[in-house]
Image 1 (cartoon, rainbow, N blue to C red):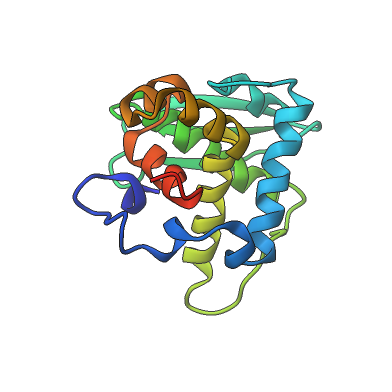
Image 2: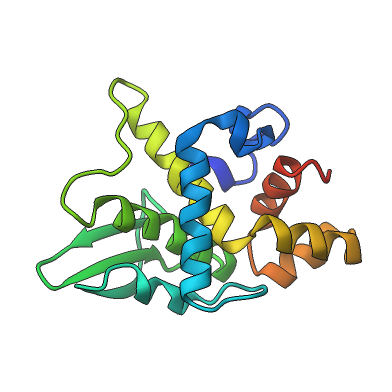
Length: 182
């Protein structure tokens, strides 16, 4: 996630993941979007911003604990223990970035909660692929397409959209571009 969202390290215009609709990205991305919508529905969330308490629904057998710590190399990490999951978030990140990282890590819990990855890709790009899926999940659950399209028609302002959805500005730009709105 760090490479995708940090200003200066990411070019919104050149990145393939950004401009493509899930239908063009492939079946795994379509499934990830459906998964995000499933949890929004399960949590009875009908508008922005998506509440972070939604992560409590991730695994019915284990609790999810969120810790803000001074991570240096990453924005977040997950740890699976016998009776709980621990999501670590970099404490110095802005709140909107921590929210995005929280749902990115939430995807990893969903994908690995049974002990083996649900979405598996072999080869050198497997790590990148899994990170893209996690990023896409965070984007979909924080900025569902219908909400974004509706709000964009109303405000047509990236800063107001960012504030309404409580997400990093570059994440909003990515979603707007995916949906063909900018």
